[in-house]
Image (cartoon, rainbow, N blue to C red; front, side, top):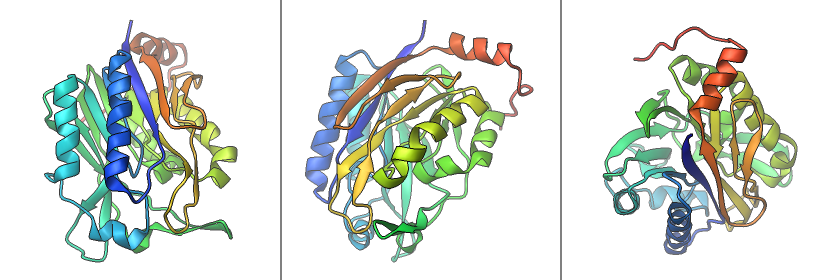
Length: 270
């Protein structure tokens, strides 16, 4: 037996009010479906012009986190705000921050995206996230919902060292909230997420953005929010429209895989 979990798939824009209403409706749908752990994607509250993202940034005790804390408490779930634009000390940049809330509304963990999306792939896929986002510098693993959860965000997915470190610190489930571009997603999204699950022998939850946005540069997100099991099998896929995908996070399956193919000694937790 395990715990039902859900990944949310959104089409966020620069309309923060509409984004939060869309997210809340899908979180409630996931909770009504029995999910006790629900995760939303990167840029849940805002996905628009990047300079405006910095101007609208909020602190951890601001309205966005407050709404998610209230929802977690009301629905009695563990709720991951995949990421929001957290206000920092640099007036030119903010953090891209993931926050995990417990069923009493308490803030359990905060992770600031470490690897920033600075790429020049084609005329349609040019992006310099570091111009408006300040990178984080801390690996985060937390015990919640009867398991150890490792946090990451989107472009982190390409840096395998981070996932090895999450596994070394005891992660059993790894979250990857994302706004993966359609251009790269069609070739890399499923492959990378399945690889991270296989190499860490962990469950992976990857809530996602989907469709076209009104930002500058990231014109379309790939979608396909996924839950992947420790063998690398896709347990749930939200497809290419806003919605949810639900699967049971079964730690017996994790222990079975790790026992069948031993890859690591006991975790070193801080």
